Amino acid sequence: MSAVGVILPGATLGVLGGGQLGRMFTLAARTLGYRVLVLDPDPNSPAGSVADVHLRADYTDPHALARMGAECAAVTTEWENVPASTLDALAAHCPVRPSAAAVAVARDRIREKTFVRDLGLATAPFFAIRREDDLDAAVSGLRLPALLKTATLGYDGKGQLPVDNLEHAHAAFAQLGERPCVLEEKVKLAQELSVVLARGADGDIAVYPVGENVHRNGILHTTRVPGCIAAGVAELAIGMARRVAEALDYVGVLAVEFFFTTDGELLINEKAPRPHNSGHYTLDACATSQIEQQVRALCGLPLGSTRLLSPVTMLNLLGDVWGDSQPDWQQVFAHAEAKLHLYGKHHARPGRKMGHINVLSENADASYELATELFAQLSRRY
Image (cartoon, rainbow, N blue to C red):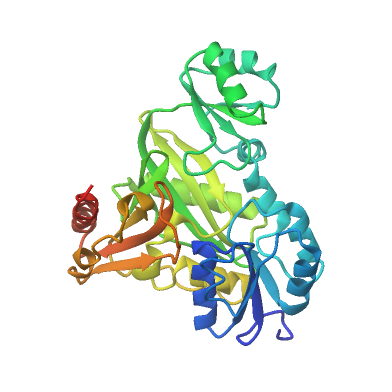
């Protein structure tokens, strides 16, 4: 590490989690000249297979954490559900970015939505449900239908159930294991948007172009940039995301997802304290990818340019496309501006993120049309 706290190539960086985001981080960091140590218990970890060192241990293993703290100049995480005790233990030895405090807010929907509301920013109306007795007041205080969502460990549509009346609410709470939840009013959507930004240790913020998202079954399907987003809405979303990052004293890459309602309201849905699926378009379409930006923020380097080089549509590839065999990738390679990214996962299953395609074009409409065509071609055999 240099005298001014900048971590330069040659140092070892640590990443907690060995999935596709950890893999992307590892590849970007190694390209920049860093060594990477990955902690993940999975022997088939996609990130572990490309790292300099793969520690196959639990996230709370004291020997693994001691080694990580001793060898790494700084540590980041690829997901928000790493135990807080792990982040705190590592922070005693080296910088951990984002901080345990920032990750904790994103880990729990009750804390997250309360944090956003306390900043004076809008969310869908919600109630915290910590016990069954909370349901009566929540149902009477919201316009139904609503969604009951677990406070923790819910993503890609998991851990949430629809609620149309009080009876449904009690049944859903029981089905979710009577764990802490939020009951959230189901708003009428005109669009779903996301802002991906990076904030450095010096407070500098670099914001990527706002993405227009389409979800299927609660999982992101496409992100289009530029999207069909009114200029005032995009500017408001960026301003709200910046306020969140500053209030958290955030260091790293942060994604903030938004609902834009048919009533013209812009609501913060949730945030991710890491690179985000909706930011994968930056790997091919921006001067600096969100993953390289994560390395830069972690190491105290100046943030890179977020300039958009080409209109783009990111198409998610789930295990559903695989079926019992590999998809016909020649259909993708036949298009010179379709960029395939596979995550190195050994087993495809429905709903599992296996890769994505970035489709570049002269305009956003053309990129979206080709992405739609490619998805239909890859799915046609089923």
